[in-house]
Length: 236
Image 1 (tube, rainbow, N blue to C red):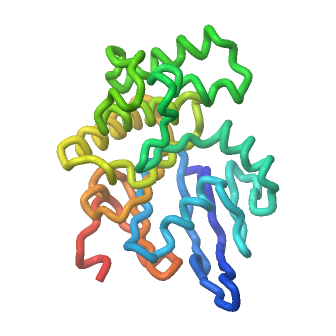
Image 2 (cartoon, helix red, strand yellow; image 1 turned 180 degrees about the vertical axis):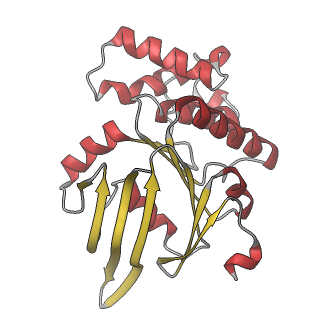
């Protein structure tokens, strides 16, 4: 199976005055093409920093990161931004929708930066909103949508540029349990339909049942890899 993303001995050290904080301490992981993977960790485990590395939002202090076989560890921000725009779609806990734009316009927005013409942007955004069962809400702005509907818009937006990888950061963190379950079932359905590589970063033990494989992080490195759901006993 092909590894689409690979982290090799990745360290991230933040310097806060005279204090050095080792957020990642030799992180090694592989993400295979087309899989649904979870990176699980408690607060302080390094999962947020690992998300930044996996999603090309930051570069490591040392170590190597490969995307499609290309070492991206030393790229500057402009190159990383181009890479993110084409290869990675993001779904955030806080949705990060533009309040002044409709659902349709929010989904269209990432396509503008890839020079896609307006007619294609509209058609593709409409189709994606249908895929997440929001065709009846396309002209509504975020403040007119429920939390679950906002997350559906965010998922559609993440798919706008047909990325190879979708990265979900605590995707149910601001949702009630019923809506959270609906969103996770939507992710599973879209994963099956579009064959995308999905990486979910979470501290919620219950979400690991939706993925095919889980990396458990502690103190900035992987302590265990588990197929399917994990239990409390595995992380103590």
